[in-house]
Amino acid sequence: MFVSVLMILINCMVWLIDFWESLFDYHLWLILMLNPTFAAAVKVILTITMLVLIRASLPRYRYDYLTKLGWVKFLLVLVILMFISYLGMCLWF
Image 1: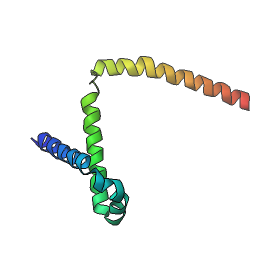
Image 2: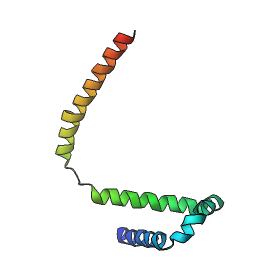
Image 3: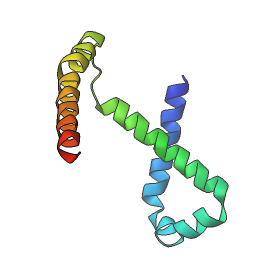
Image 4: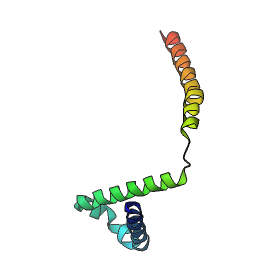
């Protein structure tokens, strides 16, 4: 229920920003500087919008796949980087 209300609010804000461009073209920085409450609300709304868009567009990974990815791929990359940094420090000193 809360998510649907939140999505409606986000869609309304996107609609307002799209169709009231002339207001935001020239006076946005003045409004943001003079009204910090409005600036905070805009930042919160943009952050929520970006989080919802990222969550909706990226696939969800299973836990076993994430574990395999962490142990096989990332650990290998970290060991290689550690070895390179160790060689760099040995050559530097």
